[in-house]
Amino acid sequence: MENSGSLTNIFEQLSQFLQFTAFANLTVGNIIMILAGVLFIYLAIVREYEPMLLVPVGFGILIGNIAFHPGLQIGIFESGSVFNTIYIGVLQGIYPSLIFLGIGAMTDFSALISNPKLILIGIATQLGIFSAYVIAILVGFTPSEAGAIGIIGGADAPTAIFLSSKLAPGLIAAIAVSAYAYMALMPIIQPVFMKLLTTGKERVIRMQPLRMVSQREKILFPIAGLLLTCLLVPAALPLLGMLFFGNLLKESSVTKRLAESAKGTILDIVTILIGLAIGTSAQAETFLTLKTLYIFLLGIAAIAIATTCGVLFVKIMNLFLKKENKINPLIGSAGVAAMPGSARISQVMGLRYDKTNHLLMHAVGPNAAGVIGSAIAAGILLSFLY
Image 1 (tube, rainbow, N blue to C red):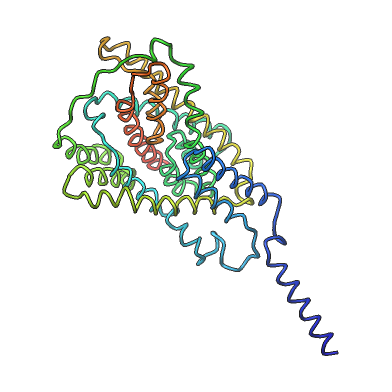
Image 2: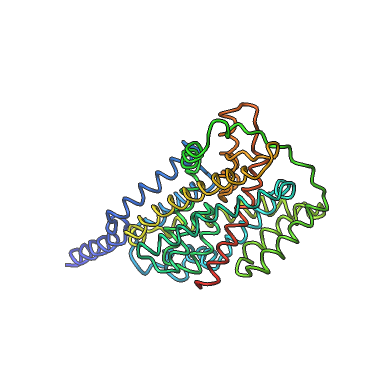
């Protein structure tokens, strides 16, 4: 009898153990998301599409879709768990702000200072954000959700995460994964519109060399930039404050070590944490919805509109510029804030039609303006939607 009781107890314990395995709790949705995570990792490693972003996000998706028995305090949405603690940096907007610190510490604004007209290109591309906002409302999203979705048009994942954490916390995963995916796919998306909207003659326009910018100008720019943008849109302060602070660390020449830390160690750590947190939050039960599909479609529409607006705006500008001052429309697409990806695409496209026409230094100008512009757009949306 004792042996029979012990055997029954063993079977009960074994049954309980099996109930706690992921196999017992796995759903079709979990399997789909795991395959999506593997795809992200494949694109990052084999295709080299933004590996610094897609590897953490892809692996995070794998972690987030290991089905577990509720109550173990291991899930990202379970208070007190390790992943929930990491996720706080997303919800509070800490990681996006620290990423902007790193971006500021690695960005050279010389092109903007040398040719201020390039700022207008970065502003023009923000029409993609507000166009997507309007479309999102028309398809049934609330104004707050639409604002968070629209910011994908800036192709700036940290800004998208920051704004969605304030306006639509329930959509953070879908918006962030969409933004990161489109940042990685920019080399596929943008060239289609760049080629469609320009002529062969326009693609080989040679721009005037940029003038040398003094150290004093470089130091004054982040100070003036902070005051001009944040006095106008204070809601953008967490992003733009850190962006311009990081740039001042870089340009002051007396805080080189801090600048190196901001764009090196700190940025690397935060990139790992934010990618892992966003990926882990993309769980099947909340991610595989019709809203997510709409967000992905709206995201690509927003980027397409932003790219189109940037290229067309340059073409309009050229109508009023002297021949020697004309701007190559290929750099119009760089106004989309994916930095430095959009600028590199302009360079690659330019070299495709003229092997000696290097557009990178010119494209960095609207690219940097796009980063500032997307943060301002986020601040504007936050001001009247929060």
